Image 1 (spheres, one colour):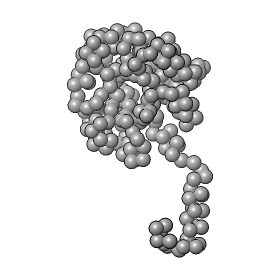
Image 2 (cartoon, one colour):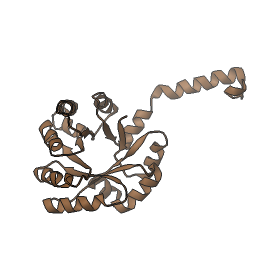
Image 3 (cartoon, one colour):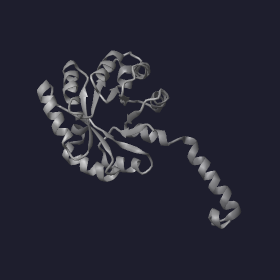
Length: 224
């Protein structure tokens, strides 16, 4: 089954959506945490309490020098949670991934904008790849096509690496990506809520209720 993540650290929304969705965990990045004004050591205990002890968290390094990225990755990995370390798929990032994978630390290569960038990250040992679908679209590229090509290459090369597409503007992008057979995906809260809603649903449910009341009054189904 596809791994479903929320791209947020909003505890209230995670709690709300975890009640109805099979969440694998949460993805974060430095911008999300900075916007929330809360660091990793503050949000992870709360998120784990909401989702459960088996929740997986994707936490990104902020260091940019090779040795510092590696050191930070080790420290992130030492936190008492199921954590995947996120590293931007730059030249330095790929060098860090190769070093980190020697110690079997789970890694997600993030900020992927091209097929070549993604496949090189996979060949360097990344466990997950995060292509930015809508960001590619806004730059004039075809984000869905990049995901499709990457999924094809991973399959053809028999690489043990999962695509975890990110950056979505609408539900159509999400569904099109899922149709490609990706093994993981992370979606923002507003898109997750849109996926749960449809303008026809409420009226249909109200009609069911009214039809029942007209015949059976306040009885419940098993009492009829």
